[in-house]
Image 1 (cartoon, helix red, strand yellow):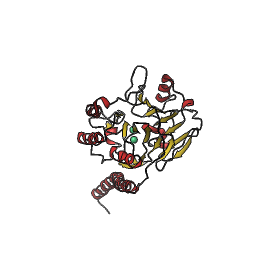
Image 2 (cartoon, rainbow, N blue to C red; image 1 turned 180 degrees about the vertical axis):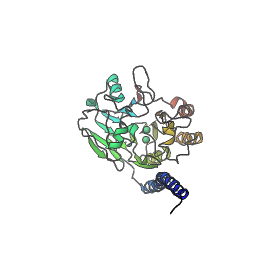
Image 3 (tube, rainbow, N blue to C red; image 1 turned 135 degrees about the horizontal axis):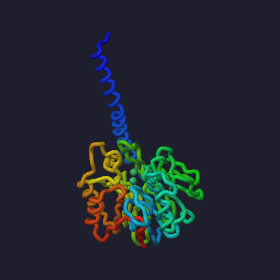
Image 4 (cartoon, protein in one colour; image 1 turned 90 degrees about the horizontal axis):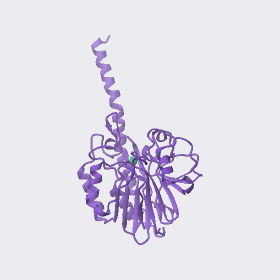
Length: 333
Ligand SMILES: [Zn+2]
Ligand SMILES: [Zn+2]
């Protein structure tokens, strides 16, 4: 018969083993996924897009992001939703966070205040399937994308997605490579990244070719890294880089969401091990990389970057830097 002492010891070993399995599983998945993402990246060879056309006027109106132009009137949250007008085509890029699961959501409330209606929108583009881009945690669990917690008539409009997601009021179309969505408007196709907790994350970036200027990139969270996003742009376009607008995930000195003491953006979505952090040096490297491409407009989304990083970009790009503020349109024409 086993002694009470050895039974306690066995129970303790079992408990240790049970506690070690999830981190071991996540670690193995992380290492495997990183290899897979690199293999997918290495195998991605796409021809130049010759005939996508160009738009004369492009505007980006942030409907959801962390800061609002008029915080008494418009709401901010750590998510993304931008209204993109490319000549006469109107695109809703991402659907915000709706962190309290409300109906109408902050996105719908801001749309109403800004006079934006789904009747005027031609298509939805979802950058990637994270909760701050598809309209909330409940959606992420259910594989849904939705602008609000209640029914919204999306007129069966096309929704271009990097992974299969559903919304009964829209027509989901999964994008698996570069594709022209409208004259001058291109999805550069998903680029995958393996994230430790959030897992396999393909993200697509929009590229809009503006006549006589160049290509403007509109980015959701920036998980693939700015280096790979720009490399994809250079694979697809001969036209110069004109603008970079959106999330690049540089939470260095703080996170926009802190839940149960966990700084969300600094721990989740970095592409690093959980104990590693994105550093000031990473940000300076990214700025230098971008600076060499000589973009004329740079606007960093505050939803997944800290104020230190925003200031670093602002300092580096000076007059070319634009703030991303809910309700403040960025116009390129
Ligand atoms: Zn995000
Ligand atoms: Zn994300």
